[in-house]
Length: 195
Image 1: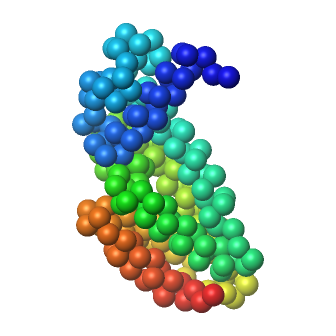
Image 2: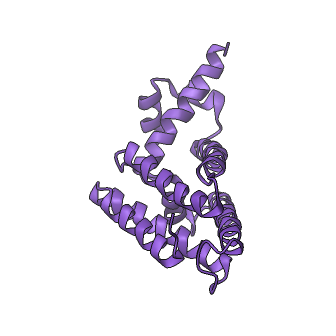
């Protein structure tokens, strides 16, 4: 069973994650975190040295969760089925969130890439891994002749990630599944993915 201190630390991180997704790391204030977690400033600073330390911990945790999501979402009876499953799971994940908050990594990339090298490096690592995993899955589908083979897997993977991130952003803006759904359908056509 977690100690009271561990519970407090977890509450801070859980609340910070939600606020960071809505407001961004830079726009979130210490007072936002205190109010959301229902704690005092001394309690927060007992667990974390500053807001950046909280932000890095939230991103590291989200990174692990995202890698787990990739492992699960890309599963399928064939390489092509794995790609299609990922598209379905990505849409469902954002639908469940009500298209609020978008992608914490995409949000953080836009917000901090020019001003916070530690955040930017972590987010770059996440996107590189996502593209890498996507490229592996695309290459497997190409080898099995389940999708188009005339373009390199790495280029198709980068196109897929960029397209999905754009779809997430527009779905967040419009509070609608439609932009992300159209982005995923377009990727299916570009990949010549038929299940």
